[in-house]
Length: 233
Ligand code: A5P
Image (cartoon, rainbow, N blue to C red; front, side, top):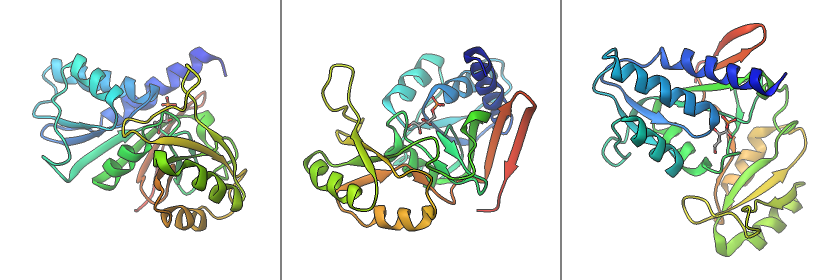
């Protein structure tokens, strides 16, 4: 699959998801290169008059900037704690529509927004599909900056190979929330629910990239067309 194919598939998945947006909705706006196409499609429909009274909650500073540039009205979760629909990308999707997210570093706010949404539509190109989470992507773990050493040791003790995510300047990359990210490679994960439970129990872990039972819909675009996978959550 060439790079231009991947870009085209991301755009196709995003545009299919935006067809589910209707006037008056409150939206969670995910983060990443696939979501950028969704933001553009939402803005296009707004400017054409096909959509009105949309309010969006961005999941990152990057998305906030792009949405403002495009003229999408923004609010915060404190204005509207319940959202109608969130559109977001993912790094890996399994057959049960469980996800690894956080490749773009926005996992904490993405998970908060996903949990606040009545419906989450995930948009991916076909390369993100996998029969076992962890096959293609480590689990990003956002940890408090004062706790990275202890959490590295903890993650290693439960079988992870850990690398600290670094900024291009060579220092640890800080998230929008001032935390750091440990990418924890567990290999193919036999039981994501057990791992989810272990990670949820650590005070130093602010969020992790296992998103289980959150996605009701995954739209997958690939060379054989667009598939819409659904599940009751
Ligand atoms: C951001 O933190 C991530 O969860 C992204 O949604 C995910 O990495 C997918 O990104 P792309 O759409 O850029 O592949």
